[in-house]
Length: 322
Ligand SMILES: Nc1ncnc2c1ncn2[C@@H]1O[C@H](COP(=O)(O)OP(=O)(O)OP(=O)(O)O)[C@@H](O)[C@H]1O
Ligand SMILES: [Mg+2]
Image 1 (cartoon, rainbow, N blue to C red):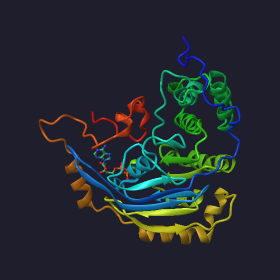
Image 2 (image 1 turned 180 degrees about the vertical axis):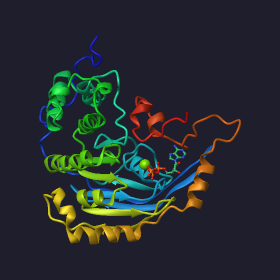
Image 3 (image 1 turned 60 degrees about the vertical axis):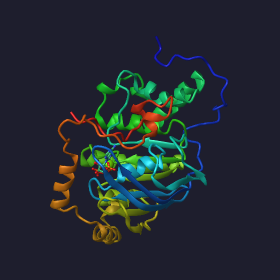
């Protein structure tokens, strides 16, 4: 049976939604967002983080391991609610998973039993798009990321980089105006990663989304972003915002320039190393107390509590401890 089988719906028309059609990039504002995880492993993670992303702007988030970057993305995408503060997209408060937001994360988390094309169609299926339009848009998106010939391949047969491209196509499925990228290329070798970054910029030029990108690489942040936001060790606070005033389109060779070196030095000067003590404290915090069930859960999670939103759809969900 076709795993995407479903009745045609009389939903809104998506005929005009084309992958190359420019979208209005989202205007995003996070205002004094704070969040603590409670339960087995309590942690104060976000401390009054304020951030604004202009339409079509690319903002890179950089900060030490465990400082709260992925958590901040989850809050921006409406996957977990903040304890205090709020996020506005184009002036509307974010109160749950938002169709204007596309997410790409470190591990592609594609559905292994579906083909590349079916994975790309999946959000459209959840959104109730008519089948013919799902197929047309999936084909266009796979073309956009250069993977049409892999349409019928299952994720297990694809390389890591190719899977990540499928994940990007999936994130673009509903034509988001905000794309959240959580270290999307960190598992790739250096050369492939550079190539993918260049491709990502071309894709951004064509789609017009606003982008928030988490990375640990200072050169990558500078190459891609209009602004680099440096976060403190947990609880994350904004330590500095550095404007990357390099002309676009950018080329990888631009990374060799003196301007880039000086920007990199600026970013580095604000980055606070996580000390060995802090790492030891974090490891102790994450140790599971005897007698307690595995897998500390956050206090509240949209992805698990919203009816109709399967838990796997939360791309930032930490893997269950083995
Ligand atoms: N669901 C959860 N329940 C409890 N604690 C959590 C949960 N998710 C994350 N944390 C904790 O919150 C802190 C921030 O995690 P987060 O994944 O946001 O950090 P990060 O900056 O993305 O780290 P990395 O650079 O390693 O990706 C960490 O201490 C993490 O252990
Ligand atoms: Mg992370």
